[in-house]
Length: 158
Image 1 (cartoon, rainbow, N blue to C red):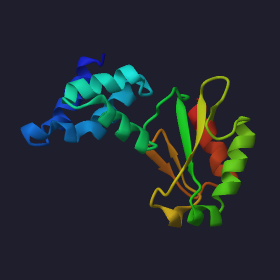
Image 2: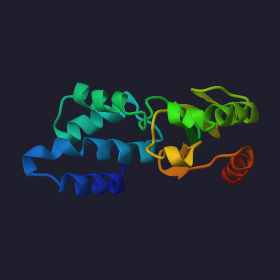
Image 3: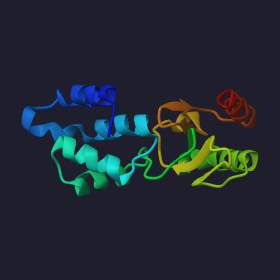
């Protein structure tokens, strides 16, 4: 279900916990699985549950609670804009509107070419850098003016 390389990474995460607590690596295991597969299908979550020796529902609960996990296919680049109040007061709603117009999609949609998915997110802990967005849950971009958004989209489209 997952590559040998991904299983090796998960095993490294499991090793960080006591032998009888390997399910503590569930968040890392899901992130590793998602990095390989692009999103977390039920089969993938079932595999992670079996690998960690835990009930599938416990894995689903984790995956559905955190918005960093994709429970359906997303574009090559998932852009998540923080729209929490401090960011909204600092221009995130305008930045989101600009991205929507630029890409021709709304939140929870993917561009027809499969390149970009736009998501709405809650606090990323970087209110002073607002408006803030995350690229694929890993790269945080701050002070996102229209010019910086244009540059980011151009760079990602290459």
